[in-house]
Structure formats: structure tokens, C-alpha cells
Image (cartoon, rainbow, N blue to C red; front, side, top):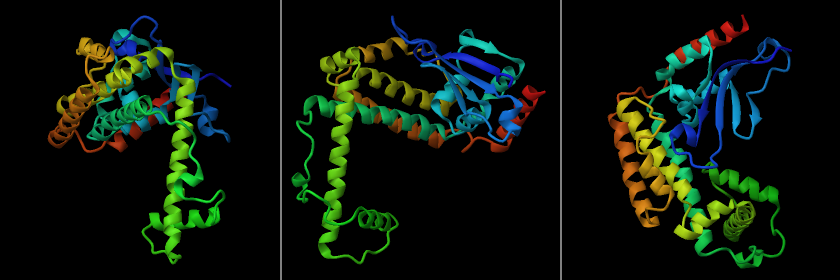
Length: 303
């Protein structure tokens, strides 16, 4: 079987943002079209190929689908500095020439959503830093017997009915048991996550958290994502190499207190919302245009 055709590859991550420091990873993203067997064969082909820990090639259909949904990583990949491009074929040039097609108001939800994921991790890790769990939860802590008093099937069926908003014909104490089981499961999951976090912590990140009371590297990317979302919605431009590099690195070094970070985050979230309301970008990417682009790129590569 012939190898995939590489359309485009670029440096990505901290080095593309201009935020790299000594020891930063070299992160590469690329777009490929597979051999004919991926499209006409019985087994199809992979959606992406991992060439290394920080080196990924996306099959063109997956790339266009996710970029059309305003996935931040793939949007950024299309707008990196030309000096960071490691390979651009003629088909890759056409992909880059069409990159404006991928921008829409969905940036509000995607960039802000990724940012809030960073914020959730910051808050969780801060809670674990300040008040780490001491022991795994016990069923007795939630007023539950050592073993389930109702079957897992009954619990699952009841939860499904509640999620659909349908009435339950159950004994009065059943809902209390269901609530206690949910809280116990949540506490158990939190304990497991805390154990995983404790074992897997990067020593440098752990030192930053200990020094500043929260993960300042997550804070850097939280602010970067929100600012980029605002810029795209207001200007229709994606600035990957950051003009606010020095301030972002200062955030990474803990220039803001935790309370200041939360205050700035709230302000930026409000600006993202306002920028989306006033933006001239389309509500969604033109799916027909992206479909036509994808077909032409695959056909060209397969010829």
C-alpha cells in the first residue's frame, strides 16, 4: 500500500505561539490524504497517525470536519506563521488559501469552552492543593450500607427516567438512596482523579502550583484562548504568534494572584460574549464549501 500524501505540516504549540522556553516541546501538526484503500477499500483508514508524542498527521476529512467546528487546535494550525511551515504541497496551498472558510461564530463556544476547561482544572487542582482528600470515601459516609440495597439495573433505569424528565413510581426513600449513591460515586471518582494527579504530576508544574497556589501554565493558556477568541470574533483574523507574549509569560510566572486571574477571566468571558454578539462572522462555517474543498483535495491527491 502506498504511503499517505502529506498536504501540509506546521510547527504548533508553544513554539508557534512564541511562548517557548528552554526545554519546550517541538509540536507538529499535519494534514494527509491516505492511499486509495482508505477511501475505496473494505477496511477504510485511520483518522490520524501519531508519528511521535507531539507529532500528529490528521486525515483530511477529520481535519476539515473539526476545523469547520472551530476546534481551536486545528484552527490555529491553519494560521501559523509561514516560517513555521515544514511542508506545503500545492494542495496544501489551496487548503491554506481557503482557511477563512473555517471561521465562524462557533469560535465563541470552542475557544471559550477550551479556556473554561483550563479553568476547571485550575480550580480542581487548587482545591486539592489547599484541602487535599485524606482518605477514599466510604459508603457509610453517605448513609449507605456496605452493599447496594437496590440493583445497579434499577439505579440505571431510574437515572435514565430522571434525565428524560419522566415520573418515577418508586418508594419515597428510593430517591434519597439514588441521590446518596450519586454523591458517593462522584466522591469516589474525585478520589481516583486526585490519586492519578498526585502520581502523574510534573515536578516543575508541581513547584509552580506550590509557589503560586494554582497552575500558572494552565492560566497562561486560559488567557491566551479567551484573547484569541475575542480577536477572531472582532477582526476575523487568527494571530497564533502572540503579540502579548511577554504578558502571557509573566502570567505563566505567577504575576497574577489567583483572585486576579478569576477577575480577569470573568472580564474576558464577558468580552467574548459581546464580541460574538457583534461579530460579522457567519453563524456556522459553510459546510457545502468545506465539503467541496475536501473532495477536491482528496481527488487531487489520489490522481
